[in-house]
Image (cartoon, rainbow, N blue to C red):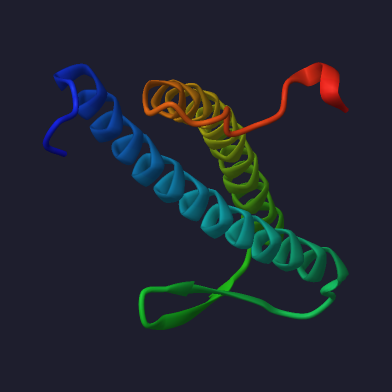
Length: 122
């Protein structure tokens, strides 16, 4: 990075940090969406179930007497997960916007063309 202005070096560092945060956020979102789908499937199976219901507690499988309580717990966990996913989506969008601004700024400072086309070129 020799020969670059301190401002450009700082922007490149920020760009790399935002890129890492964006990747971490996207990974978390995918993991939570996977958990969400699994929970939805569990809830569907619980609704179809007519026999005994069991739940895990660590390494144990425990018979549950109150199916409705398990259903309520699952629904609450699902709702919490949906809120977290929405939060991650907002965070991801914000990071993506910051990433693009930094990318354009760095490209301009280095004398390159903008990284993305202008809105009126579609």
